[in-house]
Image (cartoon, rainbow, N blue to C red; front, top):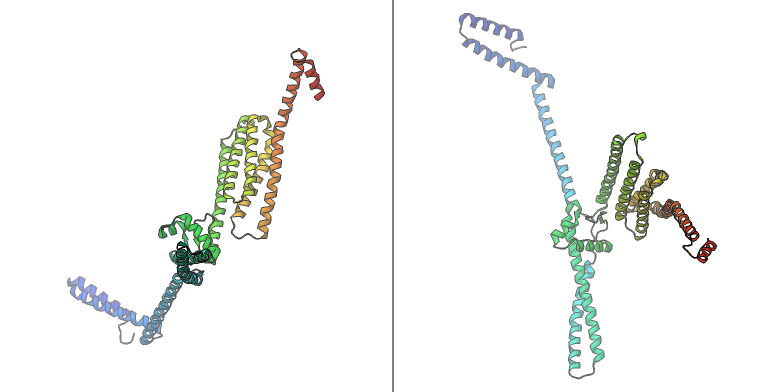
Length: 420
């Protein structure tokens, strides 16, 4: 190690100091030896590490270390600056907004105000002339019409001004999020939610918000297509999760029902009938909920008729439980398929942008509902056809027996026979 102590020499020095301390009982010299030896060890290790890293030069190692430290600091500063610029850019991002009526509102107010002032003067002059007995009726009515027209113009300009001011306020309240609930808008503007919704729809139709959208519940205003696309993705994911959850709940309910139900050979007809009626009522409730969520008078009328038919079918099943075996195919295929079609129509109807294929699918489902209603009505008639036949037969037999007993007139009996 050149001018430094060797590792073996350091070890021998420590060993001699320990033996001397044990023999003499004086440990002061041992402490001094340990301190000096530790300093030598640290010095040797530092020199060895520096030379190993820098190729034998402590100065080169220090320079490289300082250079690496500077580069690391510069990289950290660059990264922080980029992150700060990105945050500022996101915070300063503004939703597309058009100041519709900004110029026209000024023109309406200027010319309306001037015209109102001038026409008011002529109106007052003509009114005074009429009161003084002059025949200036035409001039009076002309001044009145001009005054009314300019007042209307002034009113239109003021409405445009205030609407533009409210639109700016809506954008300002939405901020960099570019969306806001209508309840919050109503709270910050001291307006009712109904007024806010109507006002926003008018603004969207007028073009204030080129990329403005309302959600399906008309409870949230979104000012950019990007935010709306994110909402649609989340809404689609939510519906998928709800369908999966409903399917899972239905599966668990079926499994639980299968575990609690008696064995097939022990299952009574009444329990099967009750289960069928209970399932039918559940389907009716689901159909009513979907009908409430679907806009459109024509489709709602068809669904309302379908709901009433299902009610009559299951009411008839209660009165005629012997029809239960004939209802199995209806319960296992026809009714679930019908609900599936209505659910698909509901999902299509929720889409804000509907292409040609979606519209064709909705039209096809509407036609199919007419067919389904006709088929279910025929099914209802079949359920009571045998009962109606039995009632008619009983009535005829009763008439015949009464006639034979002489309790009815012979002519009436013969007339009834001719009719039959």
